[in-house]
Image (cartoon, rainbow, N blue to C red):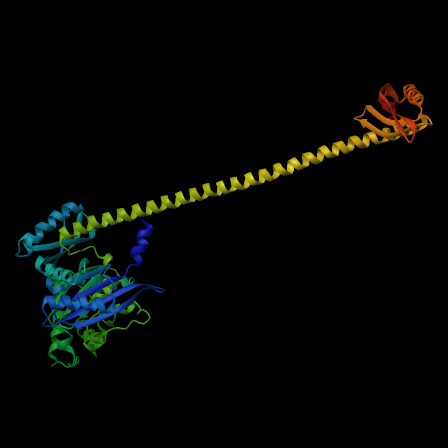
Length: 493
C-alpha cells in the first residue's frame, strides 16, 4: 500500500471552478521542489449554454494538455445551505440519522432532491458532537456532472467552496491562532468565512464582487459598492455575536490582493478594531518552470482562493457532494483497482522471486557443467599422473636393478671362457637371465655352462639349444643358456 500512496502523491491534481461568469482551471503536480502549479487558465463564460461550456472545457484540456486523471470541482457558497449543529451523540451512524432528520427540517425539498453531507468537527462534554452540515439541491451537482461528462471528464470529488478555502488557508498558515475573518472577493460575488481552532465556524456569500468594486474609491463614504461590502461584513459579525458563534475577530485576511483594496485595511481597523492582511493562497504553490498565470486573473481581479484549496489538498476535506450512488460506484471501482493493483504487485513479486529462483537454478546448472568439465580435466590429469607414477615406479625398479646388472656383467666377464662370444644378454624381471652366443669349439659351450653353474651369482643353469653352422669353411656352434640369479646375488643388491 505504501507504493500506492507514493503513486497517489505524485498524481497531477486538476481543479475546475465554474462561477456565473468565469471558468477557472488550475493543475498542479509534483516537481523537484514539491507540488507546483503547471497550468492556470481563466475563460469568460458569461451567456454560454452548458453545452458550450462543455466544449470550452474540452478544448482547454486538449489544447493545454491538461491531465484528466484526478479532476475536482466545487459548489459555490451561494448554491448551498450550511448549518452548524450540536447533536447529543458521538456515534457516526447515529449522527448520520440525526443529520438526515435536520436536513428535512431545514430546507423545503424532498430528501431525494437533495445531497446532504456532514463532517464532525469536534466533541463536547456530555456526549455531544459539533457537526458541520452542507445541503445542496441535486440539480446543481447534476448540472456540473453533465457539463463534465459531455467534456468526457470524470469528476473525483465535489467540494464545498467555503470549506476548501478555509482549509487551504489553515494549511498554508498552520500556526494562525485566534479567530480569523477571511474575505474572498471574486468577480461577481464575495464570500466571507470565519475560522477558529482549525475549523470553519461561519460562512456567508455577498452579492458584491470585483466587477462592482474596481474603479470605486475604498476610502470614499459615497463609494456605494465598498460601503455595501463593509455593511455586509458588519451584519455578518453581528449575526456571529447574536448566535454566540464568535464574539471577537483577531484579524481579517483579504484573499484577493489584486482587488486594489487601497485603504480598506485602515477602514476595517477603524470600524471593527482588527488589522487586515493580504494573502494570495495560490502563491503558496510555486509556478513550474515554463508555466505562466493567465492574465485574466490579474486584469479582472479573479479570486484564486478556491483553486488554491483544490490544489493544496482536496483530500483534507471530508465533505463530498457527489451523489451517494456515484460515490458507491467510485468506491467499488477504487477497491477493484486497488485489488487489481495489489494483485499485479503480488504477481510481480512472485515473478521476481521465480526469476530469482530460476536464475539461481540456472547458475547452479552452469556451475554443475563447469564442475563436470573440471572433473573431466582432473580425471585426465589424474590419469596422466598415474601414468607418470607407473613410469617412475618402473624407473625406480630399473634403478634398483642397475647395480646388480653391472655385477652380473662383471661376473660374466670374469668367468667366460676364451673361445666364447656373447651376442645377446637379457635379464627378465629381477631373476631370469638369458644368454646367447657362439663358439668354434662345442666343448667350450658346455665348459661355459659348468662355469656358470659354479658361480655364486647364478643357479639352475640350462642349455636350451646347441646348433652348428658353417662360416667360411669353419664350423660354428650357436647356443642359448638360461639361468636364474642366485640368492647371493640378491644379497649383494
